[in-house]
Length: 152
Image: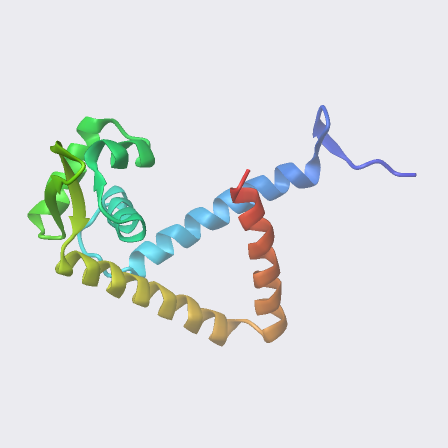
């Protein structure tokens, strides 16, 4: 009976190799998606905050800072920058008038929707033009595994 090769105490070589490959491929894919996103001068942090508000709805600055794992001062700077572009608005929190909720403006919603469309179109076209049906099915199967990994 052959044993699985390991790089150190109980870590299979295949796990270490897969970890490295996932990190590299996701970094390259993230960069490529940013290129086709069509969000102009927005930074990745600003784009992430806009996407979070789009998915989760209005949120306080402190909630956004916690969700994005940044300091409140950093979130204030991010919100100021995207606010200057007219992508967000602030309204009083109906549950606590001392707080403000940040939400997307119509311009912000359209920017996110347009970006999502551009990224989806690029991915769809690339998968159609450069992958076989069997390869696309393999990608779908891999996504199930990667989703499970993301839940850890």
